[in-house]
Amino acid sequence: MKKQILYNDIEKILCVFFPFTPEHKRTLLAIKNNNGSVCFENREIGLTDMDGNDISWKICDELVEMGLLEEDEESFDVFFELTDDGKEIIEQL
Image (cartoon, rainbow, N blue to C red; front, side, top):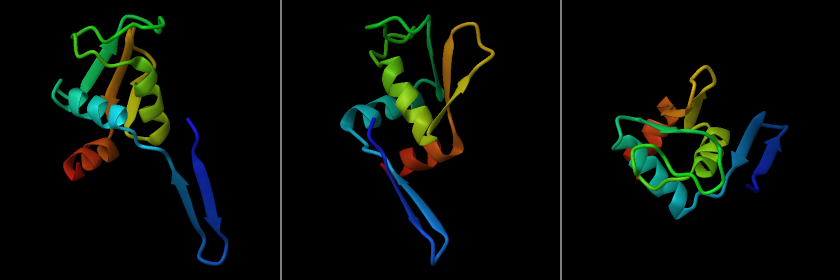
């Protein structure tokens, strides 16, 4: 995922821009409708979530990088959960 980072030294502002695709939006909305979390058995290529939402763990990884999801590192499976920022973005969609 290509992101853009801008820093304004005068105002001391850091901005990070991420491309936000329709797939990111669809994935966030699917996770919200799935009680705010999603789980995958593993990171196998082509694998979709265990609840049949037809979303990809790769997109979830990108949403983690954006700060909209967090991954539970202690989970046996690959488990993602909405962050507060993710919930806020969903409300704006």
